[in-house]
Length: 349
Ligand SMILES: *[C@@H]1O[C@H](CO)[C@@H](O)[C@H](O)[C@H]1NC(C)=O
Ligand SMILES: *[C@@H]1O[C@H](CO)[C@@H](O)[C@H](O)[C@H]1NC(C)=O
Ligand SMILES: *[C@@H]1O[C@H](CO)[C@@H](O)[C@H](O)[C@H]1NC(C)=O
Image 1 (spheres, rainbow, N blue to C red):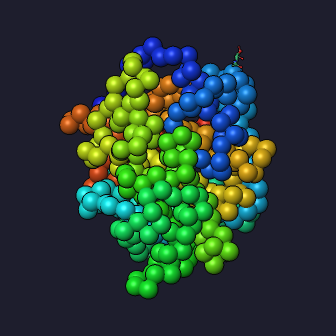
Image 2: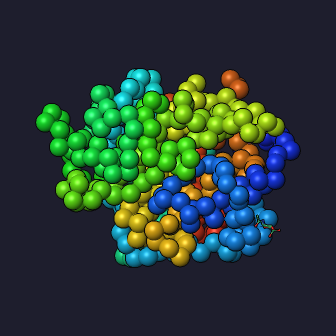
């Protein structure tokens, strides 16, 4: 039993388009690699295709064929190197640093980020080695003056990473084996496909651009550009009149919204760093990965337009797990043993 108070969000009547939300998978076959966004804004008819009409909870389905494609996964002590691109406040950095430090903080109060990470640890490589239990915050790089401008393409994102690892002063270490380079763009930076198709993505750098193959992820602060899309449910888009935004746990809608996207990308980069390990779907250029399968699901009963049962703090904030010094709202990830999405705040655990 959970000692926490639970909030079941009212199920407001919504346009039929959102009833298909739980199965946005269809879109991942038509999106750029590793794209992420919480709401489909095109005609969704994914449910039937992927879930075969299954109406079970939390994405559970015998129709999801997540497979291991024999590539490497991150099995050794992962180091995350944040690159702060643009203008970042210290309070914003602290929220994100505390979140990254929470992955391995096993002493955190239940339900915890470390408990959430346990589902990711269930994935193994061909030698049977699990995803690393430990993940820690490495060196950081500031790119305060927008070295590649305020509008980045997928390729210029790699150039930003190159600048960070080749900087004359305090370059980030080169760590292709256990490093994850996390590019975080401030709320005045546009990145190709941001808001339309994606809130974040992960990939690896090309030796021709950076000189090395480095797994990386990008996540943008959507506060100014599209909080209703990328910081949902702390902000709600105007086309969803029946929904009310919930209070964010760290009083920063943009950054609290980034937390779940950072979790999404780190879970996927760890289980599919070179995009040849764990994914579903026929086409490796459009892989459906372990967090894609559980988008928008934050608690028991989640799916469709419903986030699932979350927790309510005494201050009125909505969250679903605890970490270092703070509370966070993080989407669940696919558990390939149980064959459904799972998270530490599940009611049946
Ligand atoms: C979506 O799927 C439903 C149920 O299978 C079907 O009735 C409907 O015609 C489909 N809509 C579109 C736009 O293809
Ligand atoms: C992981 O790496 C960090 C930094 O080098 C180190 O402090 C930590 O003890 C390592 N953890 C494990 C379990 O090796
Ligand atoms: C490692 O992965 C296997 C297979 O999924 C799982 O049974 C085992 O519990 C995992 N170990 C850890 C420490 O998570």
